[in-house]
Image 1 (cartoon, rainbow, N blue to C red):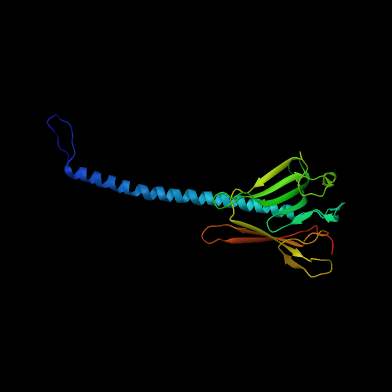
Image 2 (image 1 turned 45 degrees about the vertical axis):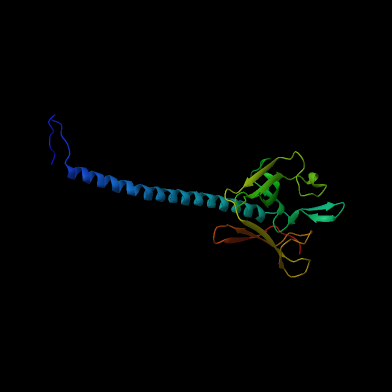
Amino acid sequence: MRRRGGDGQAGFTLVELLISLVILSLILSLIPATLRIGRRVWETDDAFERRQGLDSFRRYVEQRLTEALPIHLRDRARGLRIEFSGEPGRLSFVAPAAAGPGGGGVYRFELTLGDAGSGKAPLVLRQSLYRIGDAAGMTDAPPAGSPALEHRSHEGVAGFALRYFGPPEPNKPGAWHAEWPRRDALPDLVELSFTLGGPSQKIERSIVPLRLKDGP
C-alpha cells in the first residue's frame, strides 16, 4: 500500500521495494546464462559455416580430380611422362574447369597443405592455365607470368594425406601406394584423408575414381 509524504508525493512501502529488488536480482542472475547460451549458439553456427566451407572445397577438388586428363608428354631427359604427380602430401594433375584465371579451359591443379597457424592449416588448391607448349621442361610449376588462382579452405585441418590405387606396373594387380609410382598412366583411385583436429582427432576419408584414366 502506498503512503503519501508531507509533500503530497506518492512513495513505496517496504514490501514493494523488497519485491522489486527480488525481481531485479532474478533478472541479473539470468543474464550470464543467457550470454553463455548466445555464445554457444554463435560458436555452433560459426563451426557449421566453416565446416560447410571445408566440404565445399573438398567437393570442388573431387570434381576436378574425377576429370583428370591422361595427357602424355615427351621429356627429353626422362622420356614419355604423364601429367600427373602423386605424393603423400601433394598432388598435381591436369583437368578441365568451367571457370578460372583464364576463363573456361584446361588447367593444372596442385593440391597441398598450407602453412599451419594455431595447430591447423588450410588446404590450398592452386589453379593455373595449362598450355602444352609451356610444359617443354616437364616441370610441375606453371611458367612465370602464367595467371594463377588459389582456392583455400576456410576451415583448417590438423593433418592431410593422399594415397593412390592402381597397378604399379602394366599387367600387375592393383594396390594402394603412398606415392604414385608410374609415369605412363593415371591411378584408378585417389584417397584423400583429412584429420579435423579437436579432442577426438577425427579422420574423414573420401575415395575419388579417375573417370578418364587410360592405359593398362
